[in-house]
Length: 150
Length: 77
Image (cartoon, rainbow over all chains, first blue to last red; front, side):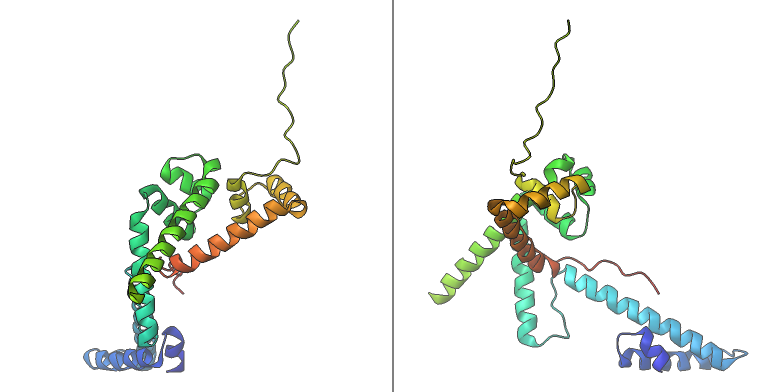
């Protein structure tokens, strides 16, 4: 179980993987049940772990809050992601692409190639995009604060 | 007689463009250009302030956008 636990994010997943492997064992008759069980349970645990990680990544991408955080934190995270999404949508498409490519880890050369701009202009365009993004984000929050106080 | 023409040497004390400061922070300048910016910002308060401001701008945007972007795919074990 410890070995399985290392392949999964939590103990529950490791236990589920072991249980499922035992259930499958009833349907097959392996020559070495011990080795068979270990291999199958390890593979199941690894699959569960990958699935959980993909799910978390998709949830982040779609603005769903981290389920392991408390309800208030989840609410704030969800609200912040929605705001970021709205503000990004307000920017010109080139700024959106610049920000997403840059913060997604693309190099200036890759950004220039993807957007059809000169590599030497990426730095200044990126700075402008950052300023626009933060100005929009902050003005949206100021408006929200003002309407909440009214 | 052919007339010799040459481009004037770049002014060593000229302030770097804002885009170059940004590229410097992102590690996107050649090592020679990065060294020039580093030396310049050590003796120019205005450019050192501009670099600090760009750093703050980037940190703020990164903290907002980090949660929005999907995490980079991890390699299978």
